[in-house]
Length: 199
Ligand code: GLN
Image (cartoon, rainbow, N blue to C red; front, side, top):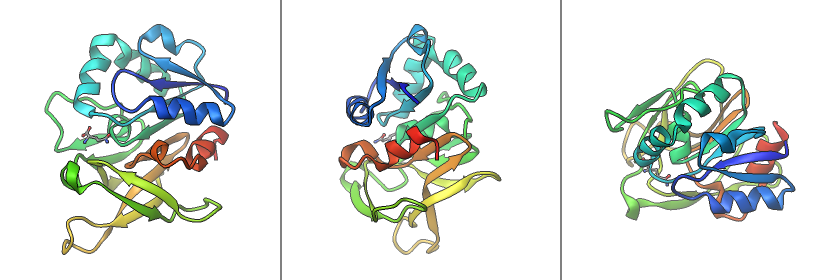
């Protein structure tokens, strides 16, 4: 993959652009439907999914991206980007839309408020080189995983003293990868690399 779009309507786009460039790809900031021309894959960064949903509608990108996703364009959604790619959003706004590109239900702000943000060493299936430093900022969590979705990493359930189950925070279905955390913030490029190589 070479020409990779980064949705740049709002939120944490810049560090994704830098990560992709460092890996030898040609990132393109996407703000209008015309920016999607020639894009082979799309990164949907963190930010505020309710705001992003509105901006996607007003920019005309909602339908344009939905079409490309339906055609099989690979996508990597992080944090709010994961919410946008999900099939269902719990604790969302009633008018919030999502693309349904991966069959998971996600709960917004599942780990509490901004002050409850945290970093953890995440064990990721099939990732060489040890644990991944994962930064969670008002992060969502995956509450339901459909058939055909691979769970690549989990964290302890929240809140402490809950049902004790672990919850998925990194999932893949086909060429769609979603992370509840911000892989662009830790300077570790392995997940971007994995996305680009399609493995
Ligand atoms: N809490 C945000 C939302 O619901 C996501 C936070 C993030 O992307 N860091 O959209």
